[in-house]
Length: 409
Image (cartoon, rainbow, N blue to C red):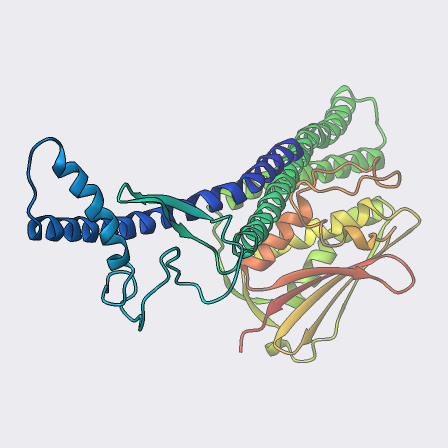
């Protein structure tokens, strides 16, 4: 990225150094064309004068006399060419010009160094048609202008190369991070599937072999097996839903749903399982009019989003295992708050936690297993319902995940 830019800069410097010679040569070629045109006019007039003199004088064409007369007539024609009666070179001249210089320049200058010159003709030996620059700095000013433009273009090109390189590196880094996250996702899914299956198999074998005659413990084992089965079902549903959403094939069965009632039933169904894991889940609603707490939604999809938030709260809550679910109304939206007293989320990670496969990689969360899909799926579901989901710190520690859904008017 840097080496090509340096090479381009060196080539540009070399081109700039040659620019002055190029401009000077191009200007010289242009002026030489003009000089050639003037010389052609002069030679044409000289030939005409010579022919008139020869035709008016008796010439004996023998012993080389004709050549002598031609040379004499050429000398006679010179003062006529520069006389006041000639209108080829100076049509506006009012009087005769000196016989040693024909000039279109009004100002005095050093005529010993013309910019471009050419001998006129054999009729005027030692006479030249010469061009002088009225502004000696015209070439340098032109070169400075072109040099400035070229340097600007070089800077723009160099900046484009650097910017493009940075963009490529950033994209490549994003792809590497995504590939690493997908690899971690596969490992985490394997672990998430293996853990509940191991528990189910262990308790099933114990019950099958009759190693636990205590009826209460048997019931406890059955509850654990059911809980682990539900955990497996939730994990598989998340993976399947992610695949459907990613391919655009996720469909919703939307209808009128009382959001507060849905949340109340969900908390009741999760209450026993949460207590078994040492958690306490409470529910509160501030929606006064139940008729205004209706949303047009897929009930099962909203449940899945809430279960993902509850699962996330349980995973990252160590000491205070207290989770609160609260519903309310704000303008034309219903909101569902899932509050925990966990570790909280660092500000730099708040916007990233809803990305696919994203997990906060630090010493506090590295031992917590997960697929990195729960929050991503929850946000997709809510956005597909015309709402959104946000996360912000909770007073006293912990986090608040707020779901907002539009109210049916």
